[in-house]
Length: 169
Image (cartoon, rainbow, N blue to C red):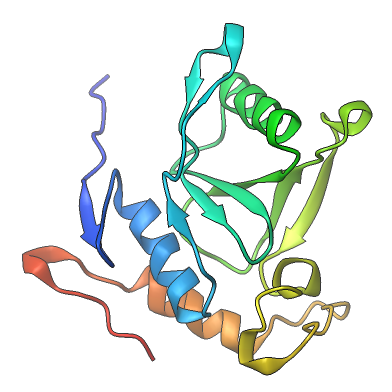
């Protein structure tokens, strides 16, 4: 079977290892979520070295992006990162979408339990000050926030070919 190679992509002053990571950066930018790409690496002992994709300082979370489902080893690394740093690690699979994503718990006794996060709900946005709302309303009726839907569409349609830069809306 032929291995598919990610396309390194430049956006916002960063050189992302994949288009999927760059699309998440477009999503974060569209919603005013501050991020740092590959901020710091960690030695996880037996699990090896680890360089998380994103640090989201407004919500004190790491975010790891994969184009395919996370492997057991990748999950173990995120769990170890959460335990070492005391900050949640959010699992972002595929391009941005209005889905439920999971994050590790930072507590030792709960580190293998996961909490679901919709990227437009208050637990994610409560510290960002997005649109001056604090905290953002928690989604309970199954309807997705229009701003997040627009940002998802914006990120998923972003084209980076020929040096194009997605415009902020």
